[in-house]
Each structure stands twice: as structure tokens, then as C-alpha cells.
Length: 395
View 1 (cartoon, rainbow, N blue to C red):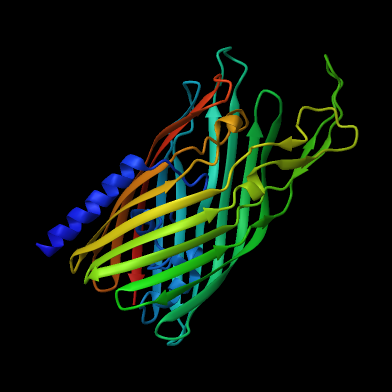
View 2: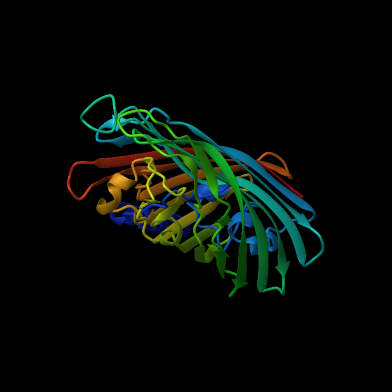
């Protein structure tokens, strides 16, 4: 009876959030592993696998490993998108991920993670009523490698940090100009802590610095073609990734049951409000002096519940909520991104295959959302389906 009451309360809470939530995570991935996706990203205070190196490195010291843990997997993202009823032709993306943690001694744990953590892109043959001249194609990918450590200060407190080694690629093409696929590298840092208030209650906090990227550079040609000759040269710009702060609280009301709630702040406005473009002296081409995306900062809320059904099977359900960073005033400047989903519901399961090996699956649906421009002429819309698979080895 007690278990049934707890399950009913959790289901009611998630149902209430589902009917009142209006939010998303912009272009930032909610999780790294299937376990994290199953918890809807609520993993700052009670991490479950080595993927914690990407979100809260202190979690490496809380995994309970004797020697080593490997978590390898991939995700398949299906994001149907539309602009003014025109559908994007690219609808499937593969998301690789992997992480490892090593027990050096009773206090020190080392780890490394690799994953695609953000991105956007579209392939629209048209975007307006006049056919044949409004094709828009964009691709942006952000991949991170994070070596780091977790350190158990005492039985209550663990801390950790990681270096972020970043890779980013970008391509932009529209009726006015084409900037072909290019790539840059950058650096950042992640730090965090986990503190146990009691055997049942613990909190976690993490900070991800702004990821400082090198400049994208494109060479454009001069042309004397009519109707207007253009002067070319090197076009360059810097597109950093946003700083993030997160706090979580995890509660274990009974053995085998975990409930975690997180809040995260993503500083999108620092990097995706207005991105300056450097152009050569005397430039007369069509690439603008800045890309005014106008993204707002975002506060994200996540709730995850994990229940051990039996010694071999654990199930998860989660909900993620955060207001779209793109408002009506900026719709026309974001046809190439469409990061407007606002509600995410996830389910997941882990099955132990033996004492050391387990497999996990998760599914998340981002509910359909659309935003119409202030003048009523342009509507962007998006929903998402994400499936993740994971194999874990722990000893």
C-alpha cells in the first residue's frame, strides 16, 4: 500500500507539471546517457553513471565503484520542424556519447566523457509563399571532451572539476549568402559539489563556464557580375557556448526509490543575443555585420523519479520545463535554429545483465510548440523524439 501511494503521488505531480509547463532547453542537450535522459536531466544531486563528468564532476566520487565504470551509448534524434507549413527535409540525427570513471583510491576518482551537447540545423526548400527562392539550410554541431576528477572530502561532501575541450562546426546558407561548413575549437571548465544532508536527502550544485571558441573564418570572392559588383574577403565571427548554473535536491523516501528536482540557468543572452561579424574594409557583399538572434536567458526545471522494480530492473520517468529563448520579436532571425520546444516528458529502464554489465534505454518526447513573429507573417514550429541506448560496465 505504501508503495502504491508513493507511485500515485509521483504520477499526479508529473501530470500536473505536464498540463502547466511551457519550456525547453534551447539548443542544449538534456542528457548525455540514456540514464540521464530517462531522468529528464535531473542528475545534478544524485548522478547514476560516469556521464556525470559532463554535468557535475563531483558525482564521480558518488558512483560506488570499486575500480572502474564505463558508460557507452548513442541517441537518435527526430525533430520534425516547420516554417510557415514548409517541412525541413533533414529529420534524423545521431548523437554519440561515452564516459569512464576510475577509482584511484578511497577519495580520488578520475574520469573522462565525450558527447555531442548542442546543435541545430534545418533544410527548408522554401520558407515563404513565393516558391522557389527561399531555401534555408543550416548545420551547427557542438561536441565536448571532458577529462576531470571527483574527490571525496569526507562522508558528506564530494567536489569535482573537469576541463572542457570543445569542437564546433557551422554552415549557413540562404538566398542572400552561403557560408560553407567550417570548424573551430575552444576551451571551458566544469565544477561541482554534492553534499549529503542525511541518509535520505542530498543536494548538488554545478557550474559550466562559458565555452570560449576560436573564430569561424570564411573566404568570400569579389565579383563584377551584375546588377551590383561586390567586394569579397575574409568573413569571421565567434560563437561561444553559454555559461550554465545548476542546483539539485535528491530525496530517497524508501530503499529503491529516488526523486530528484533540479533547476538550471542557461545564459544564452551572453552568446546568442547578437553575434558580431568581422568583414573586410570596403566589403559590399550580403553577409550582415551581425547576426541578431536575440536569444533570452533560460531557467530550466527538471523532475526525475527512479524506482527499482526488482534487483535486476530499474525504471525512470521525468519531466523537463523551461521557457523558449526565442520570442515573437526574434522569429525571423531564427529560421535556421527553431529551438522553441517547451515541454519534455521522458521514460527509461535499466536492466542488469549480470553483476557487472547492464543495459539502459530511454525515450523522450518534446511536445509540439510554435511561435509566430510579431507581424504575424512567419511561424516556426518544432517537436522532438529522442531514443537513447546505453551499455554500462561497473566493477
